[in-house]
Image 1 (cartoon, helix red, strand yellow):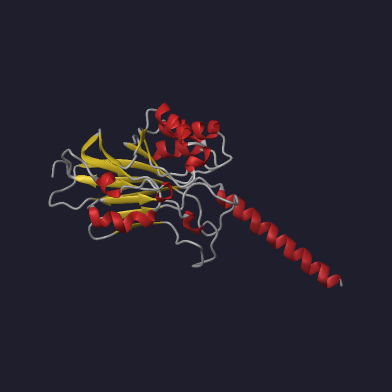
Image 2 (cartoon, one colour):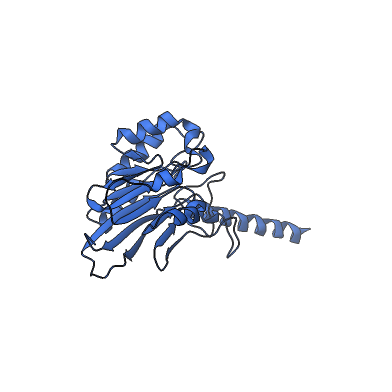
Length: 262
């Protein structure tokens, strides 16, 4: 009987350590830096810097993360919030505080996630517009500081409002295109109707809790293909349980070298 109690205590200790590690992992402030070069016949002479964060959910954006971004880049051309900046039960004050902190990095652009409207669409719109940000409601906009580029964004499929053709259309002239969506399941459809240099998304949380190769979703990944690159982020926050394992949270600083006026 004594050995049984010893075994139970050891098991309880191991589980406690594991849960502690999972909680710690879920609250890390990782910033990954990615570099890519847009293919052209000439040497690149410009650089577009993008900060991307998705799936904040219930987390607070710490000042530590903002300082980390500033330490790695003197300026950020775009701050893209890739959806799920909120979920049911998250106060508008927390969302507002998070978005205001992100806006100190650079101009804010936002695409809808599948959970955001749970606190009210009007609430999200007021918060994004309050920092001078732009919600990409199935549309493309020119990037002011890099006029050769357009940024395209589509609503999340959960809304029933997704219009990919409208999202990637643009009447003006441009050379390069960056497409942001919340759900990367849209990537293949987008590649059939557009020729972006970069696709970015989140939603999957990298599986959030995974053991080695086993998880509900693939790990997040930045991947450079022959004609384009794509980023699927593990995201910053958690959903259902405030735990992570094998899929740590992450934010992204993307530096894109390109040739102006190609």
